[in-house]
Image (cartoon, rainbow, N blue to C red; front, side, top):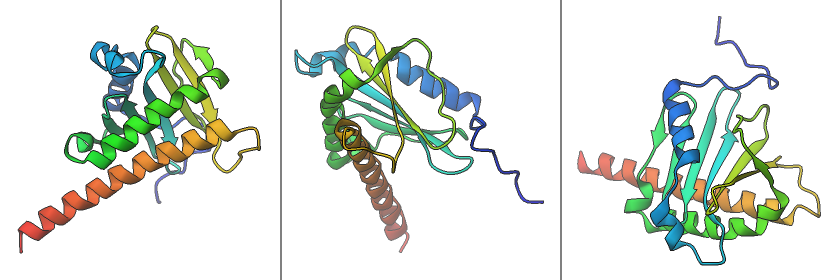
Length: 178
């Protein structure tokens, strides 16, 4: 029998490695990164939980210094692309700098649940040490959701740049064997 399908009402299965990476990203104090943000800016990082399939959950982590990493609930990860590819770092910085506009529509949280179903959780890491969350439901934006829609577009752009970097890496590895 094929793998058992998870109900959209159940949480995603996760590994200890994933939970540790996600918790580390959420609790990352980032003293040096905080200094890189504009003085009036409060957001220095984002941790975004993105369902990608019935049993696949990814967490995109971006900081104001351009760092962008992906962690998967199965323990896999894609890290370091922003150090080699400027387009990834630029997309991550743009996302974090633009996140300030969505902070007012977020709620302050003390727990960092994983999403259930197809919603995306966006956690805002702030200089004051508070963490805020907004919930994005792709494909269900209203006219009043302009900030969430922009945020969604920007983190999709980071994912696209990471994917392009991954494809470049694969072509370089494949091309060197010829």
